[in-house]
Image 1: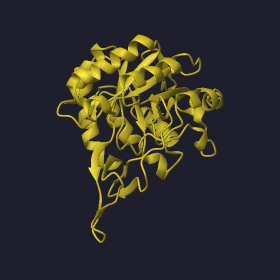
Image 2: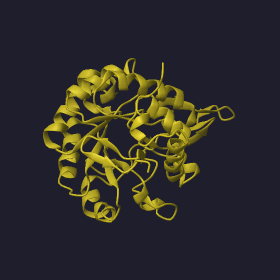
Image 3: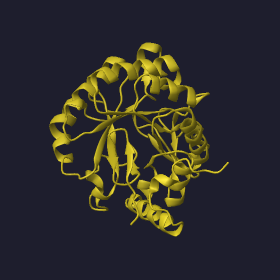
Image 4: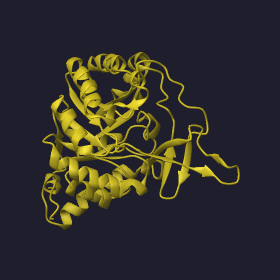
Length: 303
């Protein structure tokens, strides 16, 4: 028997495979393609304090080995989520995590406080890559004081598992990780998208309406892998790795680098059932290498 179970704070994941926010909707959109209960967890799309239309089109663009997006946290707000969306998610026999985003600390706190009351949501993922409108648009996650401030504020009102999603657009991601750990985070997930852009040479214009956007997909994997390795050595809390994971081998590499669990993002657009294939591939790897538990992989890189 092979044990795929991992633990993120109080969360027990039946296996280390999760979906990344913004790439899997609310899970409801993928029911025709896979049995969601087979996953360790799903992270649903961003929820903010109020309704957001998102950025104007075009806001997605394909790139070599990846994609750019500038969707802009489009959602109907936390009250709509609580009243309309949440009741539809109760049926899922897996951990449903809500990605919490906003542009002010008060906004983060409002969302977290309301999600805290939902019995079947065991954790949130705090997206600190959002621009802080009171600081001139600088992302919360790009400075230790701002990152710590938003985590401390949310920690006061949120009493379940608090995962903080880190931005890679920083000089030293380990410092940010330690800051949020000290502020009360139970886990960190990384990386969020890298800042990039695309240009239409014929039109001599940016492809995205916002000029720049978030780069994801296989192109970012080496950067993500390096950052996960560094952060796992810097903090004591569990690390969730993501960034360009497209197959079981990718997932195993992240776990060897120190990740306790992984998230699959862009690959869901290519193959809606890729998460199940990754889960099965991890089990096959463990069997071939005569391992009994997936936890034997965590941080087992020989340097």
